[in-house]
Length: 74
Image (tube, rainbow, N blue to C red; front, side):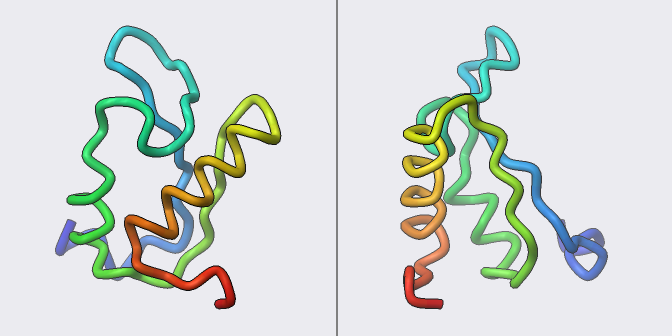
């Protein structure tokens, strides 16, 4: 992550439980988003959320705010 961090401008985000490409909301599967966002050091970049319903997009947005410690006012 240290080597890639300067080059990351966009994140394509969704979660799964390692059984298939489920497109779960961020934080609803098994991926360690806490560690991931820590390693990115709250990098300012575009977040593309791949979810299959408006409700799942909202849940992902709420999780990303929790993981990054960002304010929804930013």
